[in-house]
Amino acid sequence: LFQFTQKSVIAWQTLYHRCGNIIFWHIQPHLSVFVQIRADNLLLISSRKVFESTFFLFSREESTYMGAEDTVFNKLDVNMTSKFVGYTELDVENAKVLAITKGNEVVNNAVAGEEIAVILDVTPCYAESGGQVGDTGVITIGESTFEVTNTTKDADGVILHHGTLTGDAIKVGDTTVTTYNEENRKAIMRNHTAAHLLQAALRETLGSHVEQAGQLVNANAMRFDFTHFSALTSDELAV
Image 1: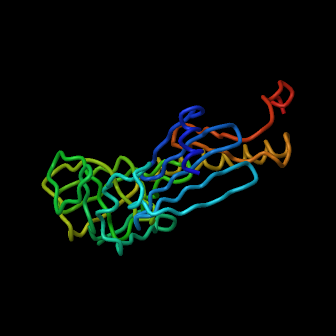
Image 2: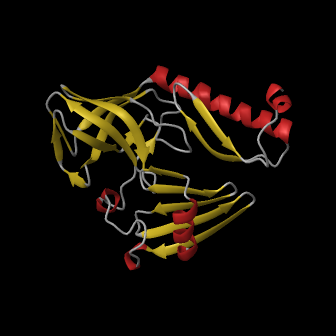
């Protein structure tokens, strides 16, 4: 699989997208390769065809291939967990700062103006997943404010809030009040619903072979990628 992947990337790579520690290569119309760098030092590779998936596990420590470099995720406590409660809660009081990352380093504190990522034990912010962008919002620490510009998660589901601190400082162990941007979330949800409706319409019009092959959903737009045997005709687009 490594040999096949390397050759295919050189010859066929048409799209590269990296989100956190997940790498996606679209090699051919009906063949993709997913590489996921897991926090437990395993490299998960999935070769995906339209109706078939195969999974392989390799030790990242024994390979110099993709993902062998050190990442900030490997420096986090492997027992660290963060709980998402944003389906039912708009804000969370008394959320505790478990970790702070700055660039490729885990730090104990940060000061105003620094771009960092904050990990809380519980959060209402939805993390970027499946093509849907993460929440924005605000984390308040006393007189300081952390503007969340994006929310992501690592391979183990630990949620990271990305942004810039204003005010004084933030440190591990601080107690916070965290709120997501409700209007932004609702706009994303509307476009997410539109993606599901579009998929249903495509399957009804083109056939049950239509499968989702990727998507982008944010507050302003929705893009839906799908598998089909040819370009859509004018009649199909008019349905």
